[in-house]
Amino acid sequence: MGYHLAGFDVDGCDIADRPNYPFAYHHGDALEHLTHLIDSGDITRYTLVHASPPCQAGCTLTVGTNTSKGWGTTHTDLVAATRELLDASGLPYVIEQPNGRAKIRKDIGLCGEMFGLAVLRHRNFELGRWNTPKPAHPRHRGHVRGHRHGVHRTGPYVAAYGNGGGKATVPEMQRAMGITWTDVREELTEAIPPAYTRWIATAFLTCRQEAFA
Picture 1 (cartoon, one colour):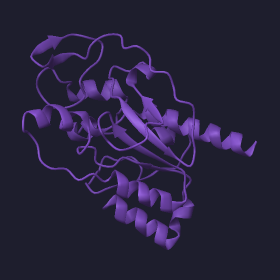
Picture 2 (cartoon, one colour; picture 1 turned 180 degrees about the vertical axis):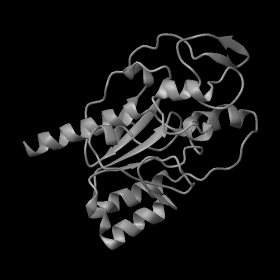
Picture 3 (cartoon, one colour; picture 1 turned 120 degrees about the vertical axis):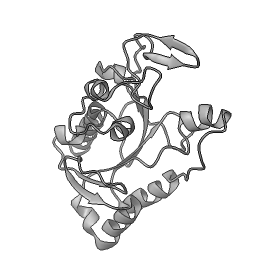
């Protein structure tokens, strides 16, 4: 949505069915779809690729709490395979991952506090074939509301993940992130606020204009 708000025409792809997705959509394996676009030459219709490989292999929750408690299962890291295809595409690209041990360059990091949102949702982005100055990370105004490690806190941010323990309700997540097109909890807990991608899209367009100035 952020790319759309910045003026892009958007096509999406996901291996899961996403009937609430508000733009043109391909239901299938993203790496297979990207391979087809490259091999067929259709990739030249695009200006920029934004990829969000599954994050479970390296996110903070998996490598921290879940591992220490013996929870969860083995996850496949698709970051390297995604980057290889993005390099082969010849296009500028963005790879997004949450905080943790994901093997990406943290060229920029975004946080809800940068945009006055009621959710922190830290995300890191690797930029391929373009760059932009890294924005400053403002100091948080307080805690995330809810239970964490046996302690209950109040604060200006909601926890837009999981269930129970004071986690955000679906309407709270929608308001906190500025997402109106879905009310599916699983989609909201995996989403990033459109403000992030609008910032990235605007930075990319600025970089492109300066390159041709």
